Amino acid sequence: MGSFIPVDTRETEAMLGVLGLDSLDGLYGQVPPEVLIDHLDIAPGVSELEALTHMEDLAAQDVRFKSIFRGAGAYRHYIPAIVKTVTSKEEFLTAYTPYQAEISQGVLQSIFEYQTQMCELTGMDVSNASVYDGATAAAEGLLMCLARKRGSVVVAGTANPMVIETVKTYCASRNVPVTVIPAGDGLAIDPANLASALDETVAAVYVQSPNYFGVIEDMDSLVETAHAAGAKLVMGFNPISLGMLKTPGEYGADVAVAEGQPLGLPLGFGGPYLGIMCATKDMMRKLPGRIVGETADAQGRRAFVLTLQAREQHIRREKASSNICSNEALCAMTASVYLAALGDEGLERTAQLCYAHAHYLADRLAELGFAPLSSKPFFHEFATSCPVDAAEVERALAAHDILAGLPIEGGMLWCATELNSKAQIDAAIATLKEVL
Image 1 (cartoon, rainbow, N blue to C red):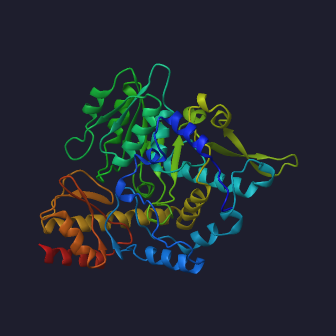
Image 2 (image 1 turned 30 degrees about the vertical axis):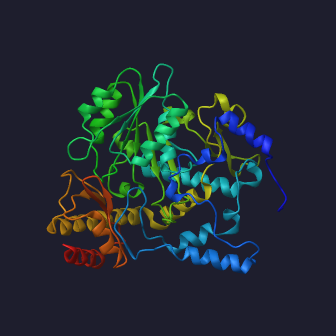
Image 3 (image 1 turned 180 degrees about the horizontal axis):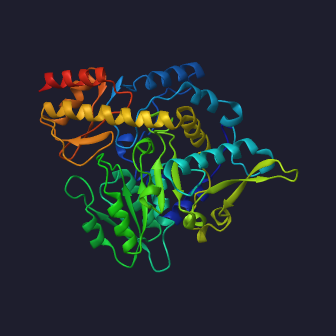
């Protein structure tokens, strides 16, 4: 294998010519230079053991904090032991795309159960088999709403900045104009500002609630405003929050999307994560990816099949509405097992604990001068001012094995989940008192 070269120089040059690039380095133009690695500092000719030891030493430099008060799109929750036990079974861990239904019944059923749970969780009519991550789901959700006379989209500026950038990237490739509405008073979207951004060319609006700053948006008014202008509403949501908040279906959203990481997936230094996509029945045939359905075989036994799959995604790519060709089946199953382990009461209790801990943290921080930047309701995340340099707060808490909130413009973004006990919060407050 050491001499195997999949692409020769001529083919590489031809590929770069089509892309309009001078070198392979241009493929990484969107990657921040501080995270790019030119090479690993490993001496040539070292043994496997020496290379492994070197890599383990590098991995040991990663920091894993005991207490985490940061969210911003990825959240630390308790994961029941049964989740890993089930998903680690060889039959699931090594399974691939279930093209041949007759020999893929187990995987198909796991996807079917996941879809069922997502519909129950969101109050929507249909769910696909999942996509790559929450940002991808948001972009795909907007694009599936495009119509012949409606070719632009509107995005709430209160959404996660990384989601907004992903939406812009997707839309740029399709020449879809994107309008971003800035946050209004209270770090939320004003329905009046949304109304002024809508016209007969807007196909869909994306709003995240709770939004990036933790604020629960006025979704009833925003959905009504979008629909009054003839646009679809794509709602981004936090799956844990639905243990106590209204569902996208109850709000009347046309498409519901989310980052599924809170549902049993560890932070994992950034992935792999899970993109949740649900929609109303009217939007079903525009869902990207695939949908698994239940049927009966020739003997009348319960069976599962790929009910809906847009084949042009594979064989007519230039005419496809989406090029999503796979799903996060193992991650989706993880979410399914997690929800089954918690049950309705467990999910509600988890949401309540997140809410209670976050509000206790907010109250204690306010005592120290970390004033809230919004007076609107929040779930388990909130933004505050910062009476001292945010970097100093980060350093002080890190010295006590605590990851502080995320520095943002005007202050810091804090988060608490069921894993942030009162003792942990009090310990962080005690450290901050020393800093102040």
